[in-house]
Amino acid sequence: MIPEKGFEKLFREHFVPLTYYALKFTGDQDSAKEIVHQVFINIWEKRTEIDYDRSLRSYLYTAVHNRCLNFLRDRKQFDGEDIGTLAYGDEPADLQEDKLEKEETEARISKAISSLPERCREVFVLSRFEEKKYAEIASVLGISVKTVEAQMSKALRLLRTELKDLISVFVMWIILRFFG
Image 1 (cartoon, rainbow, N blue to C red):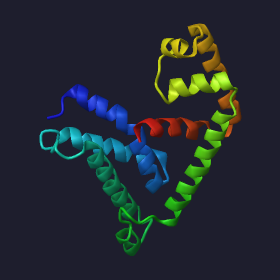
Image 2 (image 1 turned 120 degrees about the vertical axis):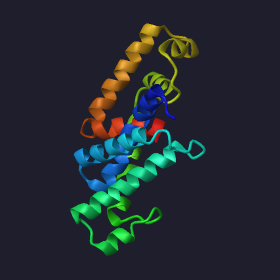
Image 3 (image 1 turned 45 degrees about the vertical axis):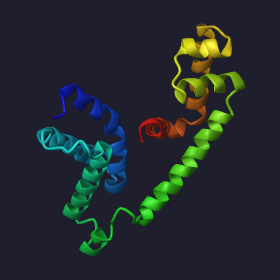
């Protein structure tokens, strides 16, 4: 049985990546969120029946995948033949385009991070990718915590300016990089 706090943690860790995954199928953020909400409601209702030997992450993605297919069938966006061919290994053209766009976006974000001044980049990478606290960063780099704060603010400001048209994608990229 999933305890309430465990369920909350599961929800917080997986809601955004699952919504992003569902969005690839539905093309509509509200529908994607609704699908993911329904999956979590179903898990809560069946929490005593869930097999913990199986990966919960895998279970979540499978459940969202299946609900997305049901959504598409119900909306008649695909004919029966197209839905039947939408298996895990298959990628429709729009998902292939999504992958290409994702790769281009990731390259643009990486380039923006690489273009930061050296100290800003070091602070940003240590904070966001190595998950170090400001005091740890200060110790590693031999600078004060105030300098870390200032460099982090500068890095975020520069990235916001450079990626202003991608800010929501950038946030999703950071989330998926850690939780996806």
